[in-house]
Amino acid sequence: MRLLRDGVAMIGTLALSVGYFASQRAALDGQAPAYAAAVDVPSVRMAATVLFLVLVILAVVRNKNEEQGA
Image 1 (cartoon, rainbow, N blue to C red):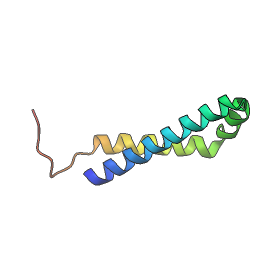
Image 2: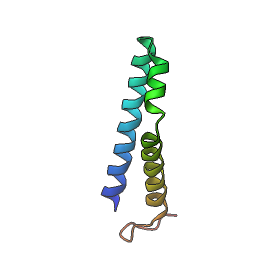
Image 3: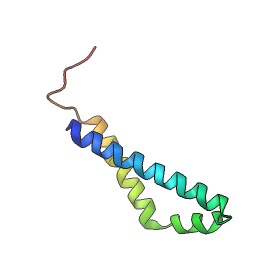
Image 4: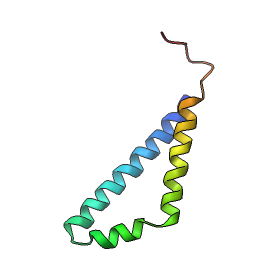
C-alpha cells in the first residue's frame, strides 16, 4: 500500500511540475491565453479530479502493516 501511495503521489507531483513549467513557458512566449484554453478541457479536469480522489482515498485507507503512532 505504501508503494501505491508513493507512486500516486509521484505521478501527481510530476503532473503539477510539468503543468507549471508548461504554463510558465507559454506565459514567456506570449501564448498564455492559448495554453489556458488548451488545458481547460473536460479530459484534463476529469484527470485532475480522479487523481485528487485517489489521493484522498489512499490517505484515508490505513495500512495494516504500519505501526500505530502516537
